[in-house]
Length: 513
Image (cartoon, rainbow, N blue to C red; front, top):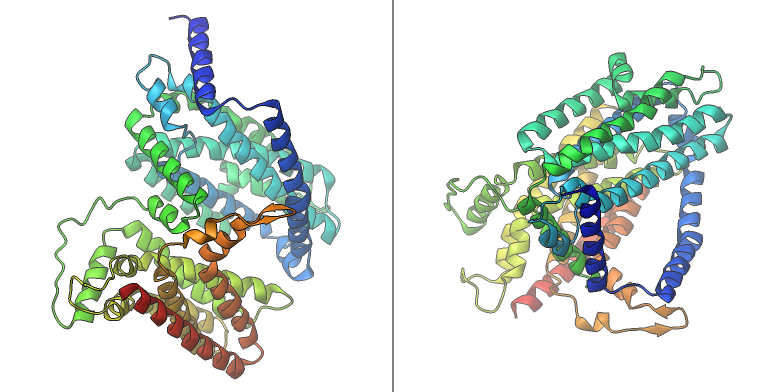
């Protein structure tokens, strides 16, 4: 069939798809533009300004303008490339609607034609994100001191070109099998470590190295390097491989991703963030023959079962464990951070710890979802949930302590180790409190009419993020206080542990009633 006929077929398909979704009217388009302008003016501009001013503070700027900071830029860019390659199987670059896949999957049209618009949309979003991030960091350098203008412009253009490399790697992760993408991602991560360690060959032979060399030329005393800019400008030629990668996509995999992300979008719109995050977890594909021993008292038997369950998700557990180690190290660094950095380090540490503890809480979530007056095991809800809380508690205490001990070996005060133990207990109790709150009350979805519109979404946000707010405000804030008033902060956190434990017990008793 001719190319012109294929274009006519695609035009008719898009017309049918648009009519099925409801064609937007002129007033809809005007309202969309109006909302976009308001969001940019009221939210985006103040947030970007605050970030730029924060990065331009002397403490953070000294790290950004350090002579070897370009090595960190190369390492971060390489890690982003590896993440783009690995994330393709979870959420690819091209994820159209299930209806469009069903409509076109059995046709003769090539996927490089039918998926062109979703690809262009994703590439555009990626390029805008790259320009925004690089513009924020370069803007902070301009505020902090003299910076060469031509390399700054080259950095922005190089970021756009590098976003094209990330897009193709993302598409490779979606299109190519895991035996191909995982070794390649390991090689890229190895180059990130080499770049951070000072390997010049990585800087000369990789796109992330070229971006790092452009960053090094921002110093007015450094010469302008044109060849990394030229090589990055040529790097979007990798898009020539995009048609072959798109045609390699299979309909069942496309449909599975499309349906998953459609359900995630629906859950997010209804305020069920926990359900949406649960939909992101892929079913286990290994460990079906693992033998789990149920010996000893009930808490030990449940701990053995939870450990056996965790073994079926080796990637999640590995990343979660590493994140807990990093969280313990960050929390210990709060004691030595100065000039506003202590808040950044403390909040980052407790946030990472709270998120990483979630990978060990599958048994805890299952126990909360199945509590009731008639227990399958003949035990109370408090007994079952308390037994399932052993694994996340041990993981936070042991893994986080490894990072804390590493910080102590690097010069941190020995007192950060017992402080981390208190923080771990608090985070696990907040996890229990969050798991036991049950479904969201339907009353929170009722409209709240105000002069600025319906603000019922604030109730939903508060309901979904209450545990995160508690962790950041209490554990994060008291970690900053601990650096100046250790005993007082420990007393306050101990009181917080008691309050959260009482609230969690009340919720558990309500679920089991």
